[in-house]
Length: 105
Image (cartoon, rainbow, N blue to C red; front, side, top):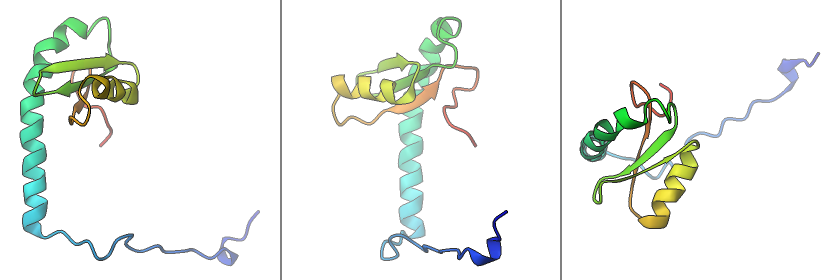
């Protein structure tokens, strides 16, 4: 058994302490993220029912400008597929299930 009192713990601290967002910048970023989600979510809700039985728990990358969506078993594959057609375009990732949540909380 290893004596944990002899193993030093290293604290890294902040990786970039010179980068400090103000509360206004944080609020602007959150508002921008929410606006992007609000543009992608109706596209997901529109097509979700047709894929619930055949692609349950697969990932869907939605690109709101073109209203294109890309479905793959793997999250990164869905993103890469969208980037092939729309380079540098941001996408929102959904999971094809009842909630649409792709990550964990």
